[in-house]
Image (cartoon, rainbow, N blue to C red):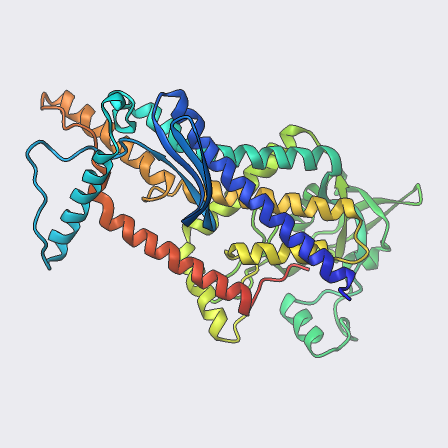
Length: 454
């Protein structure tokens, strides 16, 4: 008999798979709608790659699903300029440059074969640059819109997990992060005789107390309190709190202590050697109680902005993150919990979240929606990378065309015409191979050494 934990795990994985598939489908709708509005003939709207499983035709467009559900595409006529008049196909050659040139010519020829007399003025390449950019940005914009909608629903209904000025725990002593980890691994007590007493404990704070003022200034959020504590290392400071409705006060001196450095998402940052980054700041030995706080759509926008910043930080050092992931797979090195993961890893985390015991169904749903919002943000940022075959590569090509045409006009030269993306096929193949390799590395890592958040 299947246990409830396994059943919830499977349901979580299936829910995330459906959510990702819907996100991909809507991403392609983001391309499809403006293309049709601008009059481009769209021949195909497909979810997946490889062999077609099922398809149907509506008007001039074929819609369908393919065997490998790892993406999708919209096919538009005239994405490449046709071969120049009188240009004949080249003979085969073993030279790399010649072979790449032949590939570009073949791509142009194949694209030209799709054209009909009725397509004049309806080709993608014939659109003004700004319309082409709108079409290509439609997909990433749709992912951004999905993330904003999901985050707005979460923020306004369930709320977001927010640290408060109420103490969840008050530590008895202050030791370094490395010492804490060393004692935990050895199964030893966290505090020993001779360890410095934590300032919060010495001042009389207890779990459940709510700090209302620090250094004579009212504090309403954990960020305000934390920043004030960090800045007061070694300085006697007045503190006020409430306990069961009763106001209390005291004096403490934050200790200069090594604490982990966190990023915009509150995640521990890593040094180049893989260890956690730390900094010397004031510390009183108090943990924050986390509560779900409802907000407004503007709060949702802020949350999405913070997540975009975090994903961009990962993408900027993606080769290094991939190398670290590969090393973690074949060595005992711990895998970075903030590193990239594949759809397999996302599905696994969704299953683990759904299978959590003693967690209300509402909170499980909120975790899945938050995870799906993060996936859409990652899809948006990744597709904006200015390399073909990604959407950002098409945008970069259109902008380059606008730039060189403007320069030609400014200098009195002949119009160079549309930028031929077929000339970028060698780079496109390299990027495609790199994306395939990245997918394989991350899938293997998510199976062999998965990231565990619960």
